Length: 472
Image 1: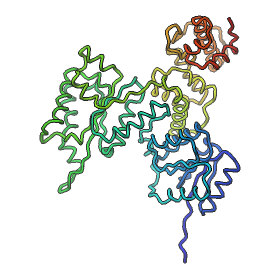
Image 2: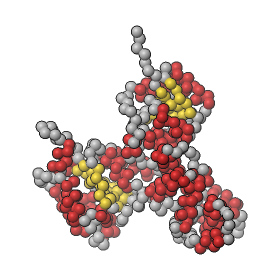
Image 3: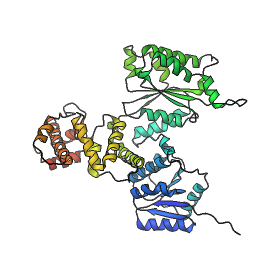
Image 4: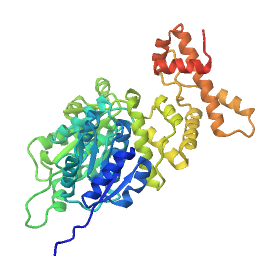
């Protein structure tokens, strides 16, 4: 008797009816079960329950494909994904993120090409998806050229055991980059130890930190009696190294020298110990003023990764908004949804002084409270806390970066039975109009220069001027 082959579940996301039916007919023709979706949000709500063997992404634009790829890999990083795309940006996205079991295939591919790609995925060894496992994959979100360059360099640097210095503003993702370097290295199965440099004291250094450099406990944990030494090594990450006390800088330097010099019986060999440090301070300035040791700086700065602030890569803001929306919808068990267009516009115009960490916090709060309402409430908190409002993204002198809350308090005194949303909308409009008027006055109504000061497009400025009836 011929053995019965159990059909696989293959999920298809394709918004076009004709193409969706075509892909469904292909899947059922192979003897598999095809589950097809038209909308991404509904697909994401059901994907984990379906436990597909392969996921096929149909003909979507670059923005929607990017969102879907990140969301799917967040759920199950190793899920085989076939993307019907010819977009170079999507192919680069797959490559620079190290997405496993993911392939791009031309939309003009034949039925046989699609079948071959799916069959190759089916033959891969497939463990049951771990609902928590994907959270530990260090995905760096963004397609800005500087971010793509960083992602590519991580694979190169990870192969080396040399020291790495990561520089960037607070909240820009230095911790994530450090974890990504460890993850893609040959020591990823071993410990990643994060040290809060500003909290290290002499006692902590002597009692805890020194132990992490010792070989004995590491080998005892990894090697049993009579076994060969298989320990690959730790990564020690000194967060905000500029905050490390001066006397401890010298002690850390001596450890570097011990590792690179003649080994003692208790220190890890250099190849099994990697030092990564991060800083939001200007270490070169600190060395010039004597607050940071030059010799330690040179030891740490073998490789350097500099992360740009979020305000310098605004094109990544929509991607980050979608990613964190999907992440926290899944985390709290809420249905996935599209971020309202008005909210997206406000997100895009804000300067995000707290960088990625701030945008994650605001999106998380908005998801928990309820999409647009939560976002508006977050905006109010930014204004009341004295932070830069969304409407004044310009960082140049002459355009104010913030407004005080005097006008808001005065405005609210006269209000009775009015919604929070209306309060915020009114105040935003007033603040935005005033910022635009100041920028136009400063540039003598040169609209292109004013748009540059406000850090918005020329077309956006003209539309807003018309909306607010701003004329000379």
